[in-house]
Length: 338
Ligand code: SF4
Image (cartoon, rainbow, N blue to C red; front, side, top):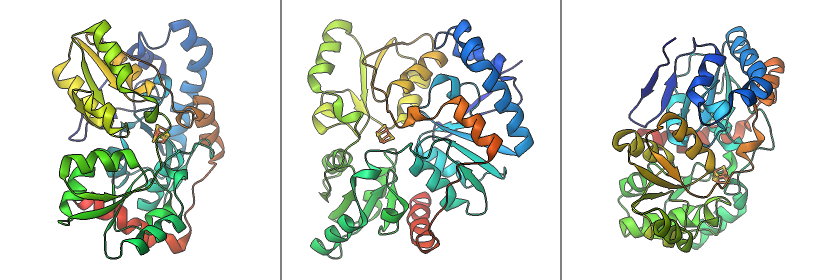
């Protein structure tokens, strides 16, 4: 049976939903052994495919999801920007977010009438948890009149305090679209510093970090270059400016995917969460992926078993405080319009 992958402008992938999940295992060749697939995943994957039809459900998966989710049951895949865009066009009544909580909240903001499920309510994010509403208000008081750009890796309450949201894929464009010399950019200090360097726009920021990307160091990159040259190094902008400077280019996961799909380089080092590398390695076997394997513990809370349970019980469901719905949605929609 033919497997269809469409590359959209955001390098978002939309799979056809007709393939039995076991056939899709073939796409994971190299990522998971056939024995492991049959023993640990095949049964849940088949049940999920059946439940999606029964529940009129769709599964959105972030690029950091494990191969057995990303390549076997996910319908729409991509980075936060692609998932937020696609969330506006969903026809299905039930949406399962195979990602972390703030991503499910964004889908719910854009689709208040739909049932949005997150298979594990504890799937959080060190960035979203790194700043409070009070912190944002204090920054606004300290810098009156300066617009607030908030990374989507944030809670709905923080988004509601915000002028406009951004993702790592569109942060530069969003900041430049404001036409101002200074911006409050939260919560990711590294992203803000990297965008400040690229644009020359002064950033007031906050000391919150992605616990996965802050672990990478320039020394580590140099070590890989020494051992594996020539290698193209692409760093996620949640890494420190020093790590970005030690890389060949910086880009969101969608930009990484686009680069590998278009150039199919012989050897590449992706400075990002490990499942991204494993998923791309399964899709692009001609490219040799090297590098450390840093997992996001929050993303890894989502499993096939939990997705199955969410579809069986239609829970846990994501809800939004009605008082926050309008202002938070406005900040996300403003981003999508840019
Ligand atoms: S990888 Fe980092 S930014 Fe992404 S969900 Fe995990 S902690 Fe948050």
